[in-house]
Length: 217
Image (tube, rainbow, N blue to C red; front, side, top):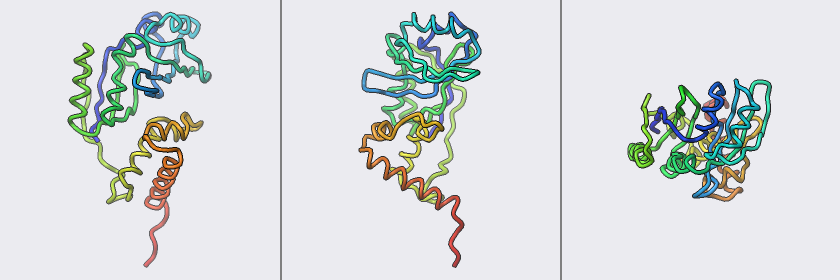
């Protein structure tokens, strides 16, 4: 897996960020609902929430958001990308090439991404979609992630590794859980029963390989 860490100046939430620049934003999760819809779950903290929510209501790059969670130091919002926010989104391309979004946050007025991609062709496709949309990708770091879940160490099959990576990416392993078994199955393109069985088999294999003491001769 190749890991790219890069920044982009995106229209997504730009009007809101200009209105309340002190607000710190971090994307919790992207979801491709279908070929024409991208849902975003993001955290906001450190600013005037009244002004922020008023700006969100007028922001044409996103749909009117719903507030999912409110904590002392932040609020979690759910929305969908619209207009320029949707047109310039690179998330559908990341999904298409088999990539994984590790982290997305706002830094110095740009969105900073950490993304895992399967091969060099996938990297080229990310650059191509950015160029097509008039976006300049500022690369910070590119490296090959060590495969710590290969068969020589943990014995996971490719399908078992895929389900574990997908579960991590969509928040299925978080507390409280941020996605359902149905969403995990949809991401993998399989039935819920198949997703559940594959996930449990992968978890069992990881426990056997990392926690259970080796059998005595």
